[in-house]
Image (cartoon, rainbow, N blue to C red; front, side):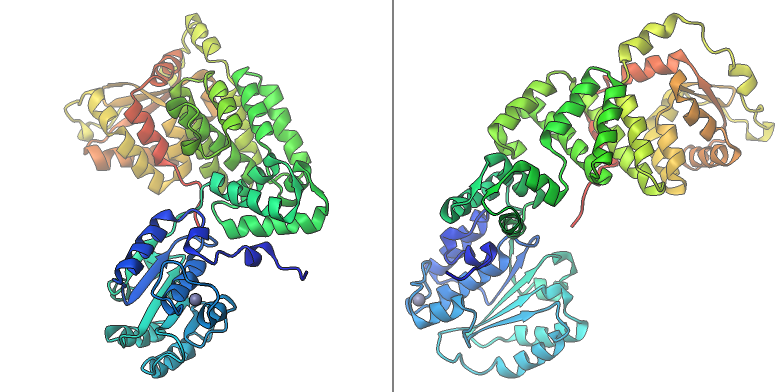
Length: 508
Ligand SMILES: [Zn+2]
């Protein structure tokens, strides 16, 4: 038997074979049954989730000798030709290729001619957003008055780039990323049929790495089969994909729970030594904390977590060691680490600092509150404000209420200053001096903010928003540590706001 790559061999031929797009399939089937078909469709969604396959199946449903039908016979000449990609009535155009313009021109000239043998002439235009303006305009003319026998199916991974005049003429379907568990189910079918010896955890690793794209998952499986012949081990998958193992994330989090900073750093260190991608390491850790949060709320509901039941149980168990607020704080810290690393050449140092922070014993810092306060307050206070900026004083709470806006304003001017300032606590506002405290182990933050440049930027952000000119005083104090501690139990909403503020994890 000749060798066919899995993605081709397992390409769905029927609506019922399409994985993970039930909402699309149901609507299309019902339109076919009622014979209420649009002239043009737009299939939007990420790569490898079944857009083109669905387009071809729809074409078959229309042109099958029994068509329009929800179950094309797969035997008539139209069905066979479409399956083999040689139907004269189904014209596929790749919008991403340079030939786009010429092909659209040809389309314009030929669209008026009746189909060769089928009932419909179907144009499938892939990556339609990539067409040039010229090609778009040509296409629009055709779309305005298409002959009865013509159907358009556009596919795109970036629907926001499709011009509104095209969008408004299409019925739109949004294809979604395929859930991990559905990808696993499909991979299980393939390995059973192909008699490949593989553990379920291997399929999980493949499915997770494919980020919702079944096609990607299938091609990784392909690679692994050619790489390891008889039996695919988890080790093979991890080395081929450079993945971060679930176990490693559980282990690292365990060290954080045990407040064992040294061991946490050790885990990071060996991962780097083994050549793991440190960005992926951080992303995986962020995802792990996200999963801990979801399990804490939804218990071991594997639908929400999209992981096998045994992993969900393990997450549930681990999440018991954290309060929801602690998970938010960890999530926040890790996302910030990602942000900071974008401005630095290295991710390693910020990540190490975050791991140490996460592994700190909070109780120890609150126990130390009986030690004398740092008396440096006076000498570090900035000079009294010039009299011309004298204002009636405003309550500290007013400043507190605007603090998130002040920080986000500062973020636009200088992200590092905003990141540092976020760690500080507003202690008091007296005689036009705003005192911002940091726990004692945050002296780096305090020193960085005390520079003339940063002071000026912060003062300006405050002046812009509150219309007052103030002076800043940064201190290290136990009071700040105490406030910080209390803030760890701040209301859900604030945590959620904090959390979403920096939440850019991945984009297409
Ligand atoms: Zn047929």
